[in-house]
Image (spheres, rainbow, N blue to C red):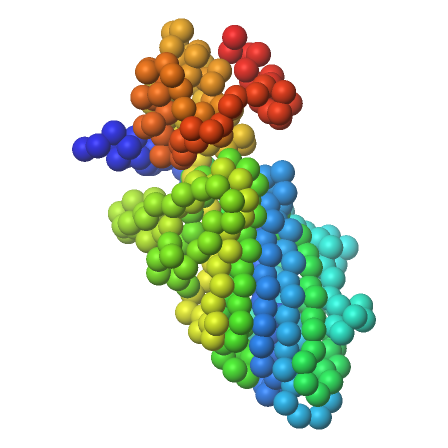
Length: 361
């Protein structure tokens, strides 16, 4: 067994000794027509940006095509209730872990309402029927909520192209297994008339120095992704007998973002992105790429380990070490991308990294 595979094996063994405690806060979703419509999705640009490892900022640009006369359509956004170690009670009538919901149609800000629904029949007869939470036993608090949210608004579509801009934030989910994970329901776009997105762009920005994976649910190969910056990918094979159940593409992103583009995008799977928790090893056999997992790193036991930790900020940026022991160690990290042109400069590091170096002097 090669060393990287052995390290992954140890990580998975460590995961298995913990309960799968965690919190699911929310997932992103497409806008959907509440009733049947002949309007189609011509273009969508979906941007997902991770902020301070705490929440996802979602920005969506749509171009819808209305082939006939102007019409009013009720459009909805389904927001699933939180689960796990969370309080699922609404806050001020809204989803408790989703904020800053806005919709703009053809440069006009639209008002919206929030309904509470128990199943997919909420739109019967073209009208949204909201539950009366005061009479809905067991739904008002706790971490087992029996309803979900529908944010809905009236959209006056003119004939031809109509532009909708849509934004919201939602908290990142996490667990013992996941440092963070988030989902987005791409398949909801199939409810529009063309049953596809004619021109689709997905932009994923998780920040600098991150290792994360995306399930191969709506794509097949790494060639379908553009790394707009510095990074690399590796294929991950899923198994129902392990933590990683589905085939995925793992990204080691030093800086920049990811771009996925598809024409005539017939969607057969949803987005699931996750970053595994890296549990610390006493012998420092593996170091996480992310700033946000540094607390999982064990204290050094000797001078070499101290030197390894001190040089982590430079290794992140691809410094090619002259010291053979450091060079051998970091070449073994799956995220390491050597850059012979990189010259280490403490002054341009983050404040956190400067403190990190000082800590291990």
